[in-house]
Structures are given as C-alpha cells and as structure tokens.
Amino acid sequence: MKTAVFCVLVCVLLAGCTNAAQTPTVQVASSLPPTDSPTALPTNTPTARFSQVVAFGDTLTDTGNHVLIGKEAVAKGEKSEDLDKWFETYQWKGRYSNGPLAVEILAEQLGVELKDYAILGARSGYDSALPWDSFKNTGLLGQIDKYIADLNGEKADPEALFFIQELPLDFFDSDYSSQAVTDRADQVVANFVTAVTDLANVGAKKFLVGKFADLSRSPLILSEGFSAASTFQNRMDTKLVAEMAKLEQQLNIKIILFDYTALTDLIWNNPAQYGFTNLTDHCMHASDDLKTTTVCETPDEYYWWDSLYPTRRANQLIGEAMAEQLSQ
Image 1 (cartoon, rainbow, N blue to C red):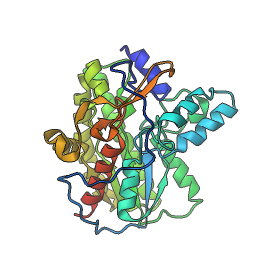
Image 2 (cartoon, rainbow, N blue to C red):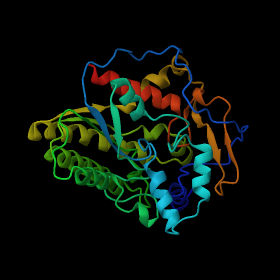
Image 3 (cartoon, rainbow, N blue to C red):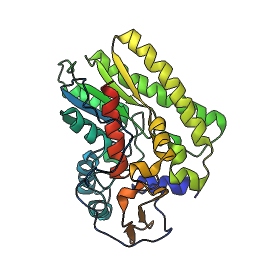
Image 4 (cartoon, rainbow, N blue to C red):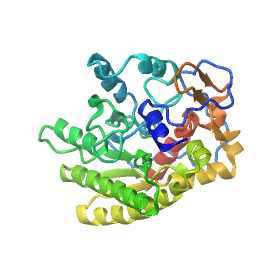
C-alpha cells in the first residue's frame, strides 16, 4: 500500500482495512463477555486513590467525542453521513473497537468517573489525521487547551489522574528516512512534554502516560513492511522515559509510565493463557468503499480489531494492567 493510499484510509477511519480473508458477518456484541479465562495478570484492587480520570489522546482513547464533531461536520456539509452510518453499524457506541476501551476499564477498576477529551485521529500536536475543518485543533495539544479553557481560570483537581496516550499517528508520513523518522519521534516526545507541563502548570499532580503502543506487531506494519516503525517507537520510548523523569523533578509531580510492549510480550509469549487464538490477523475487514464489511465469529480470540487497533478483549487486558500498575 502506498503512503498516500494509507493516509486516505486513515482519513476515513479505516486504517488498514483490507479485502483479505472474508469471514461471515456477525452482530457485534454490546458488552464484554465473562472474564473467567485464565490470565497471568494480577487482579489486585488498586490501592492508589484518585478522584477521577481525565483522559487525552487519539483513537485508542476516544469514547465518542469524534461522533459529536462528525455530526457538526455533516451539518456544515464537510462530509457525508455514509461514514457515520458505517461507524454506528460496525463500531461499538462510538469507540473504534467492538467494546469498551482500555481507559474505560481503567476508570472502572479505579471506581471513578472518566472525563474524556481524546478524539479519534488526533496527532500529538494540534492537528488531526482527519481532513475536515471541524477536526482542526483536535490533536493532543488542542485537547489540553480545551481542558484548560473548561477550567475557567480554576485550578485542575490535584487528586485526578491525568491520562495521556497516543498510537501515535505521527509515524505515518511520506518520508521514512532515518532522519525524518527520528525527527518525528523527537517531536512527539516534545509534544508530550508540553502536554504534561501545561497540565502541571494549572495544578495537575498525578499522571499516567502511555509509552507508545507496539506498532511493530500490528497487522498493518507487518503487511506493509514499515521497518522504520521499530526505530520510531524505540526512539520515542527511550526519550519519553528520560523526559518524563526530568519533568517529575522540575514540576514536583508524579508520572507513571505504562509499558505496552511489556504487556504485549506477555501476551505473545503465551496467547492461550489470555484467551487469544489469533495475534496476526484482524477481526474486522472493510472494503475501501465501505460496501463490504465483515467481522470474525470469535472477536474475543483476536488481539486486533482492525490492522492498528485492539479488540475489546485486548482493551480489557490493557486497562486491567494499567490499574494494576497504579496499585504497586
């Protein structure tokens, strides 16, 4: 797939949807199944106490904000309703998955309310991967600005957990040379530093920051041969650890980093223990024109919902692992 084609797919919320291996269409369930399958993940109730979770990020974390913005875009004539109708049919309640997202599982495990600013398609700066004017300034830093504006001059809740997570979509570009990839990775980390700093400056004290999701294992990266993905991710993760450690000292805040790769290593080493039978394919397949969409019959046995984003079962494990880390 050429980069330009991929960007078009992202812009219609279809990152990596293909015509491969058609499977029977099934109704997507509206709730998670019983979680009685064996798992090596600890199940302790988190001892850390927070008043709420305030979340920022992209498709991995958006629980429906893009739906509201999309309706505005339709009303303004920026886009047709076809994509929205497809999304309502094949995605679960505004999430880009077939069930609750990791941040929702996290908030549930903590027993607190989730206040979600994340928006599908967001990049780590101000811009979005989506082409419509209504989505301008909906990137991570734009979300932070929106939250600060919503405070109306008040201080942020110091007992809230501020959650920041990105895929990130910043990786995908027309230039995959070593220098370009390194520069983009550095910019993503710089944007994360800005996000944390801006929140700390209005009173935020407690942060859970996601190290970057394991791009190199995703079906899209594997099928398209984006060898630079590992370089990009390793560069970001290494710099992110160093920069967040500096911010903790400089701003007198607490930052916990969640390591996606450590979790996926556990799962990939023993998938059956977590209930997975397929770690390489994605469950949902959609044609480029959206006329044909199929969903696998056993989505909870798949890690990948589409070629970049996890299923509800994977989200559940991620959210539980995040909550467990906060209890340590």
